[in-house]
Length: 170
Image (cartoon, rainbow, N blue to C red; front, top):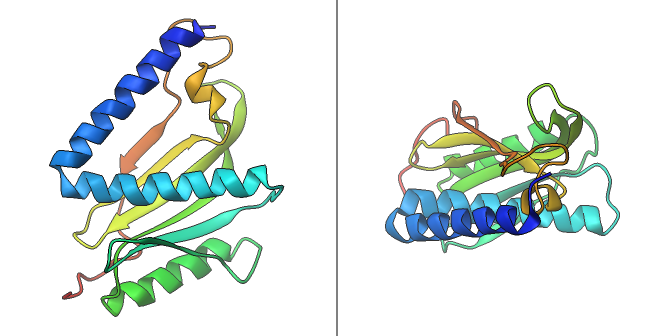
């Protein structure tokens, strides 16, 4: 396993780069704001004992992040949240929307699966990404067990919009 100090240094540097990029790029700032807030809230809910967490979030017109909880606590929870966020987007009431849930993903290619928070994040400008980070934040800060050298078990990619299907005029 990597030296914890070396891994912590990498994570601190990456956070600094993200903060600097957010200061220069409003799109990146909005993606980071909604994504980080959603992931932090899901971790908090799990720490409070919730086991099956699906949660939505949106950036309101006054740049506040607010949460959307599904009524149903089943496999339709994500669809329910996306439908709610889509309605808000069509009405021009939100600048960004996200839906996050916990699922099992391999920690490293061909490695053991662990709980990840997967988030689908969209902005009114058409940017849509899906990313995943380990639920257990220590896997970021201490490193991946059994791996030598620093590692970043994070996934991200651009995807097709599901919330902002048309760009509203706001």
